[in-house]
Image 1: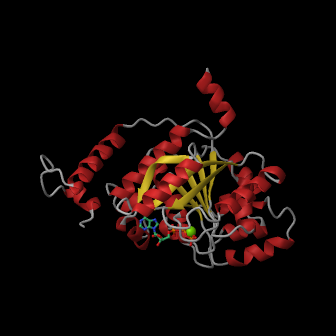
Image 2: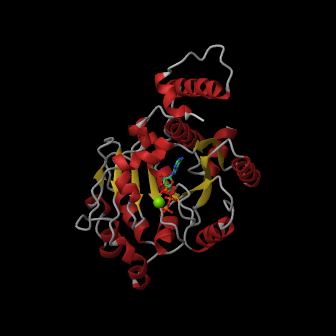
Image 3: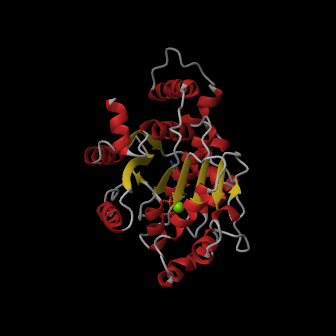
Length: 316
Ligand code: ATP
Ligand code: MG
């Protein structure tokens, strides 16, 4: 079947009176684009620190971190992405140099460099900052074991950085490696919110209890503020029953955490990093980009920074 995502930008045929599923999908996409243009966003004046984690590999953590970050930046938020994965995929997607000679998160964690000294601005937007990862980070997992305050190093660096800023950041997104080692634990200790991307595939929920068990331990011993605020369903292919079933099951288990927006499987999304771009810059009107932009708006609107405060505000 023809991919609808690109066709929508050029509208090569009339949608009127055409009731095929493709035409319906295109009309829907056009309406969603329009809705995005007219949505008013209000940032809450706080810095929300979210870690994007799932110890499963290849579920869309990096894709989610960079595209949500770019979407947030595109509506005026100031965003920092911390690339905590030695693979450096987030740094690549944000087109930030991260060769071995570049100061990186490794130097922050191991040699206590200030975060301010390693942060770069993504060419995509002045609102989009990145603390890059280099290959050295691969050794950090082992090197951290013998360090003092090994679980708190990122948090301390981030707190110092945020405290010294003249212009506040609205979001910090931490892209984690696919493991529950010390790098991910540093992210859990530094963050208030956990964003879990879940791929709509078989085995999606497997391993989730282990992840949530680790989060409980962190809450108890290292960071009581951490909470699962957001689940995002990724790589959704609505044509398969499996994807629908997985989505239903996840929504049943986590009715409050799962975003209404679902990220479709999209060629544009997977192509963008090879151009050193997020999909928001690469093809901001494509179905994948629209979905990430909607997800970002939902994240802003849900305002989960402090559930206690949110409840009081809503009640007042
Ligand atoms: P890792 O565990 O290795 O860090 P990850 O969880 O960060 O992986 P990604 O790198 O974001 O996962 O995505 C895995 C692969 O799937 C990549 O090739 C990416 O381009 C592709 N991908 C992610 N989201 C989508 C999507 N919505 N549509 C199509 N391809 C996607
Ligand atoms: Mg990744």
